[in-house]
Image 1 (tube, helix red, strand yellow):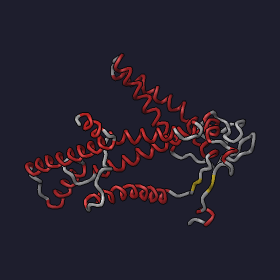
Image 2 (cartoon, rainbow, N blue to C red):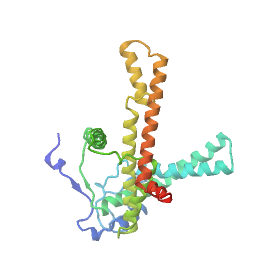
Image 3 (cartoon, rainbow, N blue to C red):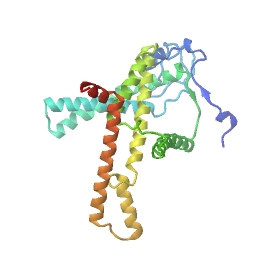
Image 4 (spheres, helix red, strand yellow):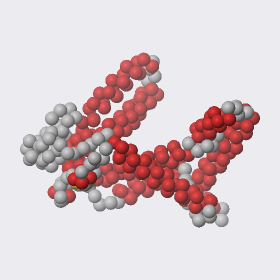
Length: 290
């Protein structure tokens, strides 16, 4: 049972954003300094923040970073280590045991080196960014997460249904070219905003994470549809065999797979056609021959 006081949102950071610039707060946190004053230490242990700053008395015990620092650490280390491994493997191939002996310690040490600055930067966001947090228990977090996921799915399903009813023309369905164009448009728009570099980079980072989440939800949902060439089709076949207690003939499965592949390839071609139309490539090619 929660009390009314527990249900109220908690606001972190200062009341005046100009007094606590976000970029400065992040930088101080990454340097293990109090994001508010920049003098006292932020951590009293490796990843344990102090309850209050020893220099200015700023309360730190209520600033939560949760799972974001480990996630960002995995994101950074994954790209750096994978890139380094692929680069060295191209110019200096090594036996598997030696590769593991080198890159496993590098991965572990790199993660230990950057996770504290990353957590300090996340706390700096909370201190300098006027973050508003609503405490929830694990069950409430699960419900909220499912609601957000369903909101994304509902938007996609509504758009698809409007295509079949003739209310939309399907030109918003895109593929890899469209995703690249959207990423570029977001980057250009962010670069044109008059704001400190730290705020631009931070905003882009969160935008890209949300964009990847939207793509993951859409791809995951598509993969679970009862289309024979996808995982959902395999589950449908297994469910049918479990209910009827009869195997599905190989001829039927082969025919279903062929039809599904044609449909999936048709969807990919349709998305690619939309992409080249949206970037103006078809008009450019048409202009060369007109």
